[in-house]
Length: 446
View (cartoon, rainbow, N blue to C red):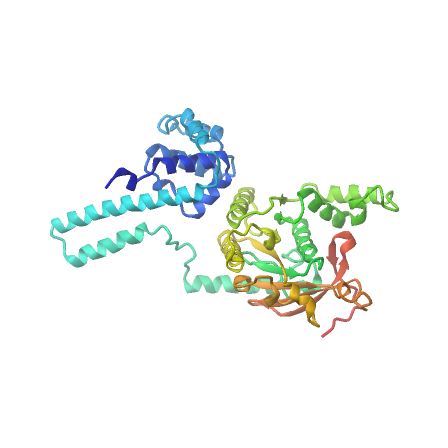
């Protein structure tokens, strides 16, 4: 068998070069299971080990930091030196093919393991081992080679029972500092939780982004870090919404301060809102048309950074919105299903709570009751199955200008794996980019 069938120097160099070119590549290649042991070249294994150490410590993985790490550990020369690291970056124009090259490296590693195993089998047979003994040995070694076998989530029934009771106890002893959406009626029915994906759906201008922002601001004020992926507007425009809510600044003023009727009273509010937001653990990702792979890699890197800073229990991610992500191919339904499944896997793997936003089908406007339900997600396909809960946002005044429910919004829970279904009512405070609580005098409809 030729050497090219057992290892690829080009693939190994390109993966390492991609990671040192852009640290996002590390998340891309580790997502497919790449480990240091998969590399054929000993020098490449050392480089990947150094990169892994830096990444786990939320440190940069560029040529300088990798070379410094190798030098500190006395392995720079064995890794072929700093010039070799630079050369790997120079021959790697982008990170586009990092995943494909990582898969080649893993495949070649498995082939080498199979070749070694075949030699061991021959040796055992030559030594007179019984057939069943050889079969058992072979099965055991093949099990060890299965890089996709992950027992990290396998626990005993007793441990699962303990976790279930702890979760129930936490819900029963609900405190004001527990995780909430910031809307009293909604919090009685559904709250954010780790490892959950809660979809927020609605028509254009219904307020789904505002509900997600209200949840994000509530989390931030509780000290819970938030990663807000906004594909609908640039980060500065997104931050205007947070400023509006935090300081009671009219959104019209932020859009056109010179044309606003009474700007003098807005400037102090702007200053107050800005001050409230300073220092909060908010990260805004304004990358447009992202793929699920790129977004997942960015979120994983953020999660590692947050955990390195001591945030180990609760993290919130908002994806605004899924239909604006890059969707390759023409099978939109299937690709959106891949995105929702990717978000679910990400939530389970990292423990974050994810609030993805979805548009609803346009046909909703042609029916008498336009309230969005779980089956109204545009090009839904398999999306609903991946969501732990679905909240539809509805404002009657969009369709009925003379409605008696002006200033009232509905959060309609049409799916909840282990929660309550129904409708929570909210105060429409869109001029300040938020939803709030209604007065006690408001009578909810049945």
